[in-house]
Amino acid sequence: MALAIAARSELSLHVFHDERSASFAALGIGLSSKNGRSMPAILLCTSGTAAVEFHAAVVEAHYASVPMLVCTADRPPELQGVGAAQTIDQQNLYGASTRLFVDAGIADDTRRDDWRQLAQEVLSAAIQTDAGPVHLNLPFREPLVGVAEALPAAIASQDGNDFDDPQTISQDILEKLSAICVAEKGVIVAGNGIDNPQKVLELAHCLQWPVFADSRSGCRVDVADACGATVVSNADILLRDSGTATACSPQVVLRFGEPPVSKVVNTWLRESNCTYVAVSETLQLIDPDRIVVEHVVAKVSQVCESLRVHVQQKPATSWVANWAKMQATCDLVLGSMWSDSSALTEPLVARTLVEAMPQDSNLVLSSSMPVRDVEWFSAPRVGVRVLANRGVNGIDGVVSTAVGVAAESGKFTALLIGDIALLHDTNGLLNLMQREVDLKIVVVDNKGGGIFSFLPQSTTLDPQRFEQLFGTPHNVDIDQLVQAHGLPSATAKTVAQLKSALAQKGSRVIIVNTDRRQNVADHDAVYAAVHAAVAKALTAE
Image (cartoon, rainbow, N blue to C red; front, side):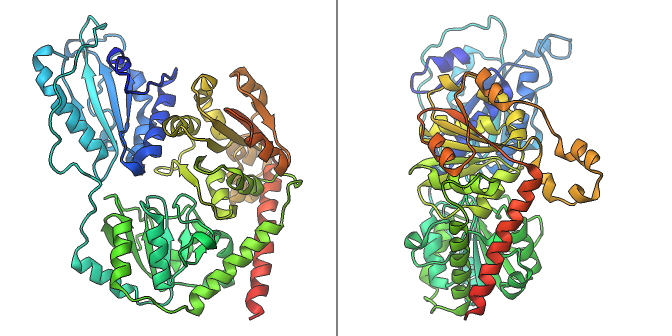
C-alpha cells in the first residue's frame, strides 16, 4: 500500500515516525478541508499496536464529523489467534466511532474488478452528509513488497453522492421556524459548522437579533462587515455580570452549528427557559443540557436564506440596541487596556495573536485555556479561519493537528497551545523543519495545568495536594526541547515582541512564560473593568 501510494504523483505524501502523530495530522487535513468537501486524508499504518495508536484521533474525527480514511494493514487469517508477531484482532477495532468498517480480505488479483467499487464505498461513507472516519482493514500475505501497476478502470460515480446539493427544508419546518422568529428577544448563537456566515448575519439583521459569534463560526466580524447585524464577540465576559445575565434573558434561541465554547453562555441559555432550536448539517445533535426543542438537519445557509425571505424585516428595537451598546463598550475597554509595550498576560496573548494574524491564514487552538481565551478576549477579525479539536475537547495530538492543517492549506498557520498540551504531543515536532510548512507555535508556559486554577479545587485543597493532582507541574525547559528538534525558538515578553516573532518567516516556536496564580487575577481584572464600564454606559441612558 505504501509503495502504491508513493507511486501516485497526484497525492501529497507525509511520513510520520509516530502513528499517533500521523493520525492527528490526518485529522488536521480533514478539519482544514471539510468545509470545502475536499477529499479526506488516507491514513496508513502497519498491523498491531500501530493501528491502536490511531484510536484517539478516530474518536475525535467521529464526534467532530471530520472525514478520514483509516487504512490498517493486517496479518492474513491463518496468522490470527496463533501468537504470530505484530498480530491483533483488528475487526471493528474502533467500535462505534467509524461511519463504516470494511475488511477487504486478502489482496488478490482475481478480485481486482472489485477494488474500485470498494474504494468508492468507503470514500462515500467518509464524505457523506454526516462525514466522519471510515476503517478499511487490509490483510496481506507475503511477499509484502509488490509493484505499483496500473489501477483498474474508473467507474461512474454513484447516484446521490453530490453532497454539496442543499437539503430541502420542508414547509412544516419553515413555518415552525418562522413562528418563533416573531419574538423580539431572540438570540442567534453562531458556532462551528456554518457554511456561509454572511447568510447568518443577513438573517440576524432581518430579525433584529444579536449574533453570539463563536471564534470558529466565521461570524465574528466588525461592524463594517456585519451586514447590518449586531455581532456579540465577548458574550462570556458580559454575561459574567449577574445583573446583565438576568436582565438580558432571551425568549428564543436559534443556534447554527455547534454550541459555543463558553460555559457561562451555555449556562445562561439553559437557565433562560427559552425556546431553543438547533440547526446543523450533522445528524448528531449536541445538546448536553437537553434543552433543544427542535433539531433541523440542513445547510445553515439554506435555512437562513429561506427564513429571511419568509419573514418580514423588523424595525430596530431596544433589545438589539442594548446588546450593540454593551459589545461596543466591551470593545472599547479591551482595546484600551494594553499597548505594544505591555507585558504579555494570557488574555493578551490570545488577543494579540488574533490581531497579528495575516489575511487568509489559519489559527489552530488547543483545548483548555487557549480556545477559551480567544473566545473571551479576541477582537472581531475577518480573514482568519479558526480551528480546534472540539469533538471530545482533548489536548492530545494538537501539535500534529496543526501540522496537518498547515500541510493541507499551504497557508500561514499559527497554533496557540499550553505547555502540557505541547508536551503531550512533542512528536508532532519531529521533522517539522523539513515539511515545508509555515507554522508558528505559540506556547503559553505556566509550568502546569492552568485551567484548574480557575476551579474550586484550587482554593479548597491543600496547595501541595492541589499542585500534585491538578497543577501537575513539570521542569521541562521548552526552549531546549524545541532546539533539540532543530526548530528556531524565541521567548516573547511583550506585545511587540510577540508580533515581531510572528512576522518571521518559516516555522518556529514562540514561548510566553506566565504564572498560573497571577493568570486568574489577570482574568478577573479584565472582567471587572468591562463590567464597570458597561454598567456606566447603560446607566448613562
